Image 1 (cartoon, rainbow, N blue to C red):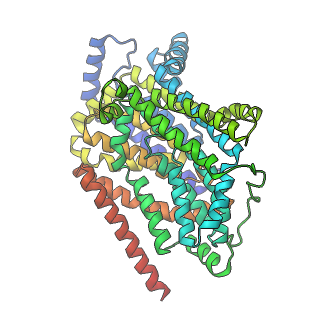
Image 2 (cartoon, helix red, strand yellow):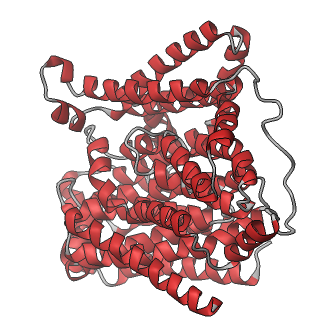
Image 3 (cartoon, helix red, strand yellow):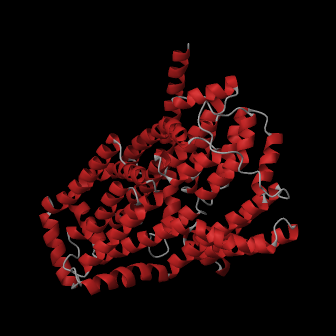
Length: 547
């Protein structure tokens, strides 16, 4: 059941997207006619090729996602509409195009299959590391060596940054490891949940060796996805500024909003819950007692090294190509797949030698790891299929033509606009992957890969998706962060929201600036200074109110 505010927000979002779609028909007749002529010259199978109708599948997917707050069915209905338009509403043609040219073609593509293999192996590795008890061992070590509240918060941030390969793994591991440490240092569960959530998706989206990098890279053709991802990192303002903000808060002790109330109770009264509902007790009671810190660190280090070697191997490094060129030309699918497979073999052998996990227990982790990655696999499959539908209808060519003819005067503001749209869509649906799965292919259709503004817009897609996901109460990452910290979910969302909105506001201004100055060496320092300045002003204002 939607609340009144949720209904109003949903209606506003639906109205926005429908208005955009209607404008494509009403104000762009010249484009439609030119597109139709191009379509006739190319002799496509569909009369809707390179017309405004080509944008209907993603628009339907977005609107349905806003209404239902469920991404799987919304993406599939968008795929189905693409099939109907391509076949001119022929039943047999629709089925063949949706399944043969869409879903089956996406799942049989060698690049996509490599990404899926990497995700499955990653899920298995996560299960193995948890089974070995490495997380619990690190928690015991940290309890003995961390002496202050600031140290505990910085250690939580550091561990979150270290575990950058996947946000699910991040939330579950950081929560179970750092919860005993933060409790001893009187850090509120609300603050711990924020630190966990803020080092999950925001860190994964700027890590070249991660499931997120693999997903984003899969939307780019010709194996240039990883190169585009790396070029977009300096412009991913929300993720980078979130890290800056966390460090500032930990070092200075600044807190505001409802979080200040929880932290004050924790520091002064030792009440880390502040009366909130407790979400069960320790998750690490049944952890493997034989586990050591190395059982957590070793597989992660091996995975990073193996994936990097796999990437430069796919880029021709061992055939004489320079390291930088090999990394730039690497195939993320091949590199991550080979790297994760080698890591899995080495990890199994390592645990057998250590005798912390039996061979049967490790084999039991295989189906469990696969099941943990099913949601990500479904989203990727449907997103790839929707991309195939829009490509077959000439959506990229149509949008590119529209932008060139009518939107040139607004191109400088496109990064900021795309950031807001991605924020809203991700917040409404609770998924980052579904959001940039819809928006990134459209953005790439407008800008060529070598266009600097296009790189900024792609980064804005990713940043906005992460921001909305970070704020959304229905986000799986937000829910897992609450569970990892054993913090009441509503409390986590309400205390985190002012922090996320503060970073989002600064990021929006930074994207406006970068639209006019598309240089990372200038835009990123300006964004960081703006973030620090905002925090210092807030600190002074809060200090004056306290006095």
